Image (cartoon, rainbow, N blue to C red; front, side, top):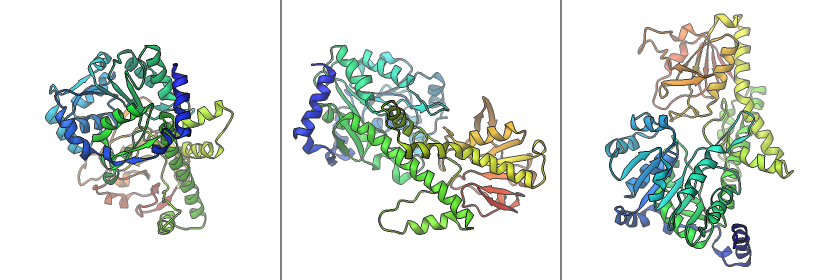
Length: 468
């Protein structure tokens, strides 16, 4: 039976009732508490390879090791491995303390070699996915990684793809190539897709407290994958297939993208009527049903909202089925940093300044509060646009020491003279653009800035205060 025949048979089974009865079931028996003893008992035997040690892979490796699973972390980026070994990767403090204590142990190894895959009993593929400036998915790193996983696959392994990607990727990148190698999925090897659901910087949304959507190729695949994922989540919510789980992730990110775009439009509408969009949103959120609050901001960053929907849109265009609502939302999100730069330009010219003579401070460079990560952060484009206009730009973020803009490293400054009297103070900046603030840090010095452009809509400060 070919992989396509197997896939079609599984679809028929679901709709004829063989597997349909269990589709969508939230399986609490796969919660970490139920599996921790099993993993601890097998710690001296089971080995899991985590491929891709980025924002989800490294925390997953640490969580699995905490549960007693032997780990080999694989990343082909030498700089990334150096960051991890040197304590410079963006993970919570508790994870760092654990990692520092166990780094280099026989049961927790890091390598850049795919050959380590052949010894693993389970493989988690956590390679980050992204898009280019045109919104076209960059799939080559994931394709290359999955090809390596297939090349080194052996009988008995469980392979779980977690990277956000296009619908059908598990079948195309794993199931079909494994079949071509002569490995029968569901008998020789076990394959599933389970997208990550991390929400960095939000303790109540940490991965261990959330259920994990899981779509497997066969019943046996589901059982093996659920056991592997047990220490990483609060149970598994089963869907009918890997493709269904892939679509779930794209739906989740598209939902957020559309609602954030709506929040941007509502903020503009509130400004037209001289109303506070935060007040309006908070009040609307008191409705007990039918409303989920999304708040205006200078743009979206990170690894999901600005990226994942493009995987869906690209495939739909190829099938002649454009998703106009999502497409318009993504255009709105992409245009937001440009909107911030234009508003800053307007305020500087209104104050009678020549752009080449002014100094601007960008406050907040991480893509969201509570994280030390500037991946796809709007700050990068905003700073780039201002620099291109001849503006002198500094940035301040207490969690980020440096930021790469147009291929050059910028270093965070501290404008508070109580901590650093040697640099520029708040009064020396013609305009402070507040993109975000980090929890637990004092921003009282913003009151002394001549002008503040508040892109968070929450900082009522500065000698003159403006909203985006």
